[in-house]
Image 1 (tube, one colour):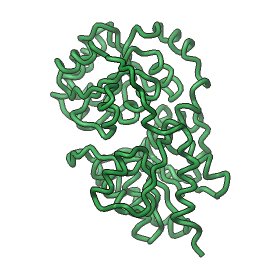
Image 2 (cartoon, rainbow, N blue to C red):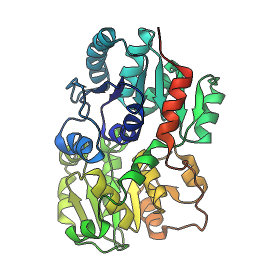
Image 3 (tube, rainbow, N blue to C red):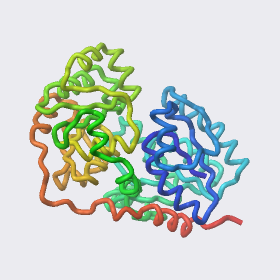
Length: 356
């Protein structure tokens, strides 16, 4: 049973689902954490993910409310289906609910993207990933740093370095969307604009941080295109910052775009400004400099090799970093070879097998 619920998880699940179904029967469960078409259905359609067998339709809510509303139906479903293994992805409330429900019923848990740490327990995502890791039997790590983080916490059994499944998806999708056509549709020229994304609660739920980010995005030398997450749009309006976005011609706020379009916008950009973990990696995949709008990152290796700069939500720091956008000469293969999904399946088979 694979449990997904949010946009980043659809991207991660796509190659794993294809690999799983070559040798196993997969029951795909969508919690409904992301539920509108632009953030959910379009990704299943574009990435070729099978239609979910079950959609819990949980929707939005507080962290406690959302997780609780997932736990009850997930437990019932696990009892009905009795899967050999539950696969969870990343660090969302869907990840935590899936790991909790399965472990309480003694169903082995495999965590794809295990071992990541921001070392900031104020982040809900950090709590989700730490708890999920310590409940998992199979810990599928994208990087050596993730393996090291688990070792430091005393977790060594079932740990596998498999590479990053997001690279599998990015390479699979490349060529399926024409970058020239996408840029033309937005009136953009290659290398003549910046791409921005903002969605983390630490930024969107703080008037001070969100305002500072918007002020920075409207102060850059290059035009900025910004696909706005629904929650971010809601908070821009609530804080009265929406008018500043609309009024500034060089900052173009657009509705969420499909994965293929986002990759095309990324490949053509001079740089990326984001608080998304996935976008930091995708920028690195395609050798695009990144400015991270956070004070820390799980993807420390992108900073260490010089392709990513942490600027937080400080207006001056963001503007300064966006003005440099260094492209280092060195670009090592930090995230594997684009064939992580088959290794995920092999690792699950090795550590879980099939219960009698």
